[in-house]
Length: 173
Image 1 (tube, one colour):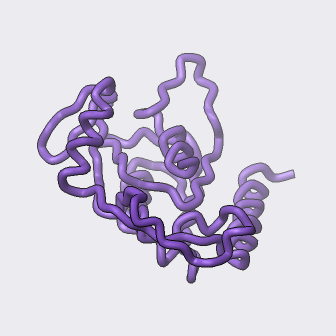
Image 2 (cartoon, rainbow, N blue to C red):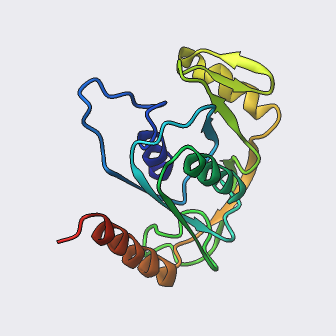
């Protein structure tokens, strides 16, 4: 999920930089906002685009992430796109709603990430190298099955224009 990776790269908790060079911006479309640094370390301005009918990752985790990131001094813009499901910015050939009964969903998942890279979920601590064990634990309580999605061409066009505006406002000519 590219949107999730963009959020991870925006915070020094996940990607420390030995050289000091970092991405200035992160653009996350339909991200899974399940990884929450205990102490966010903002390193980039962030734009988050969410679909209001996303039943794969939902909005609540991202709304929490936005508050936490902003409270730590990060610059973040979030926008919800009406009628947009998970992957609403996807393949223009997928314009019909589809249901994938076996897809894993993360709507109710929140993982606290410590500054040393370890994760805390459900009262248990997991080293960075124990990602598989973390996911197994999450499957017992928060990971669901069955999600829907499609490409919403109108909202794909809207998010594209919003992303261009975000780039223009952060890199004035």
